Image (cartoon, rainbow, N blue to C red; front, side, top):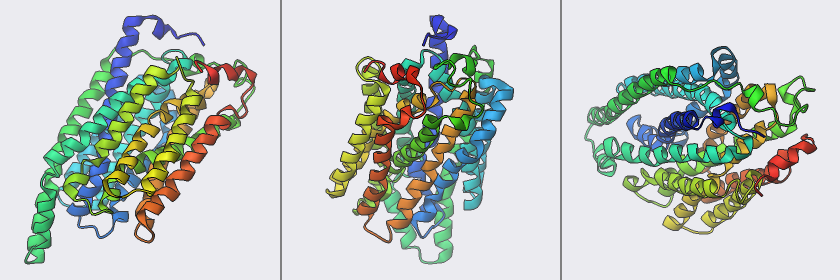
Length: 437
């Protein structure tokens, strides 16, 4: 596929990449702070089970399911640029809601704030993911998404560290203070003081998001008509009347669902997993950063190898096999070694989104926005799959539960990389899957 006019103008192309890269950094920070946030809410709101604490990821990621299709309709009216700006504004509102109600320890209201943040991210990602895919040739989309992934995962490494320094510092000592509180009143006063620590970090986050919304709106970011830019497989979309008539897309939605589920499981549940071995909270607070560091390494590998040495499809297959191997290794080991293999899933997961998304939207033509919205709906896997772990780990061996959830997900991703991506595609689609292979 030939490159778009945007790619032809190198200065504007680099500027556009920089702007979108900044957005990926921001929503990486906002997304991956959820890992340490699970530990924060369990303590601050005095929750008695991990399942209640994992409502953090449930509220956040379910927003994608409910808002993805409305987001596509909004983008049809606003265009991608204004849609990205609007998404940032909605995220800012959600950050204000969360920070405000955390200080009064209103957990349902805080979950509402996280849902609003997720809603803004849904709009932002529904625009930015296809935008970066079609900013240049679709065959090299995985490389561009890998660059965006590097920005996202750098923020993901940073967010647990910021959370640990500003909010969760000396949390083990604080837990001991709460446990030793002489009266319920003293305990509640301590917890209220702890909960208030989250206020200013989220207010600052809201301010940054609002400023970015204005910056994007006034930037030189060009509009790209995705239906024209993503016209691969001429005639493959022209004869179809519904986005639901693309089997490779529908299988891709399920692939995104299970992929995001295991990605969030490896990143946000790793602290809870570590606590299963008795590892103290002062250490588990930072474990999300290790998974994200693994993903960063994976993105760098993808940037160097796709599409020059590996096709998007082949990279996805290798990643799925690694996911199966690391999941088994985590089960058959203990302690820090087992936690290390969970973190290594970050490496296995890194190339999955950059491969699945362009493979799934390839050839959708005028259905690109709606197809992208369906894929974004699949992000709801991050709400449901980690919650299964939180619920069943208290009933069965937590390592067995982790394996029983992760392994089938990676097996399905392997299927999609070998067969599913080509379902319903005509012969013209074959070169895309084999590009650079």
